[in-house]
Image (cartoon, rainbow, N blue to C red; front, side):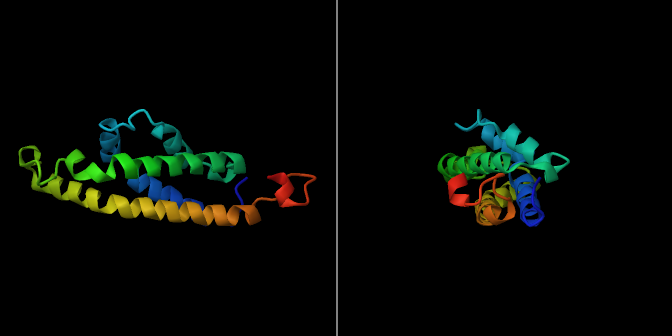
Length: 148
């Protein structure tokens, strides 16, 4: 079970993930990148499951690591070219979206994604900081260092 102390942070992380990465525009960007085979679905299933209170420490740690790897790859492969991928780059005027509302939305995405990734990383750090105190040590282990 997820400890009560981690739930508020986990809920914020879930919201940040849903708003940043569990969206159609983000999937569109991922499809046209070297990351298209990355299993975003597993992360999405994890963060959208109905009962997050039963998340085991091992599963939480695995998904946090997957999310960190994904963020690193997004920073490497997507962020440097986000405007081009969203077709809002002034460097390629022929590819620019003509619908003004769509263009504004895509510009908003391009400018907020780096901040959203940083917020997700911050929340992962808070969970990692607090999880040792929140999860009890395995049965029979009195020294946490011995359990690791």
